[in-house]
Length: 190
Image 1 (cartoon, one colour):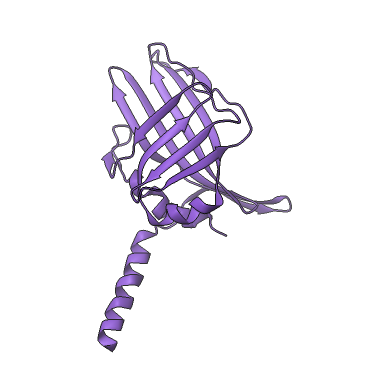
Image 2 (cartoon, one colour):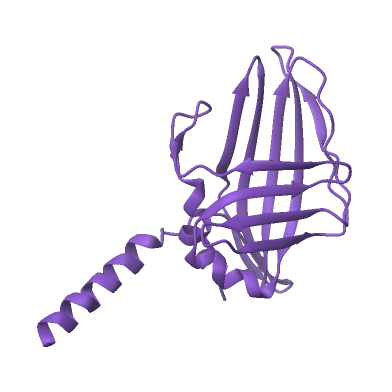
């Protein structure tokens, strides 16, 4: 019985330690005004087709105890690119493998991105958004992988199937977007 208990305890501890990744922050500041920390950006989605590319990066932030999800969308093309804007009515829906749907609410700030032209003649649109977690969804994100992500913009809705794993054409690294929250959400818990 003790042997069984020891093996079970060892397995649970090993699983917990392997499920959580060491936290890497791009910013981690505490001063007289408050505290702010942001995890490094993580590639969630990458599409490359016919000279057009799009990337979605996530980072988690904790500002004076309030957790948020930062999204950065990057589009690159020589052709016309429509602007997808975030506004106060924008939402992010995350469907988990267990069937749950988690809604995140956009910060009340309109953003249609910034258009930059690079030296190779490509237009690059960078759009950022900050989304607030709904209280009930936080725990579910720690325990179930992502399967689908829906972004509701000002005038459009886009769906993304979240991959278990992919090798990025951008940097050659392997990403596991399906388990992003399971591995990183502990980095912004109080």
